[in-house]
Length: 191
Image (cartoon, rainbow, N blue to C red; front, side, top):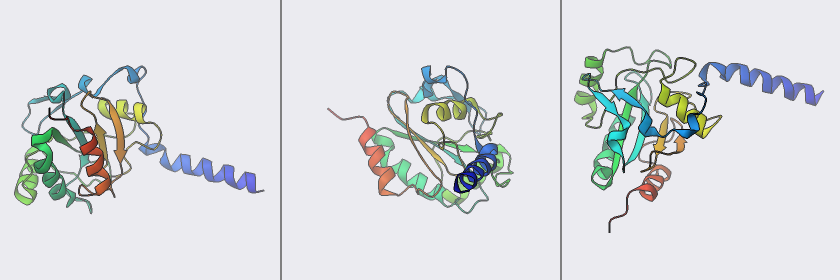
């Protein structure tokens, strides 16, 4: 009886999580973050290869979420470490609770006026499921089950070689000691 209950719990848990799971592309493990590109809110190409040699923190964002104040912490984190080799890439997404309904210009205006965001921001992207942006499919294939975004402000940490090294859920704030320590460990060493 306990085994049957356990099987049911696993089945229902997997069923409930299935809309959030990103389906990986074949051979994605042979790639790096540098193989992917986005478009900025201003419509310019934003290839991640532009950030070779830097630590990249990719964060799916939203303007109408309980976690939206993390924009402030992300900007502070970016300001603190950008001259040491960190870049933050904000990826607006409407995947969770329809909490990013705005256009590119509305998102840019909101982020600039309310949080002073200066780090690169992309156009709105799908970050979950079969229609997920290829970067999200790749990072899921590398970091595995559980690494797909479950909500807004999910974070992926990419090292200076374009390798996905870790992920952090929405509840890990930009000012967390755990995130700062992971970033500092990966930053390029000054000679």
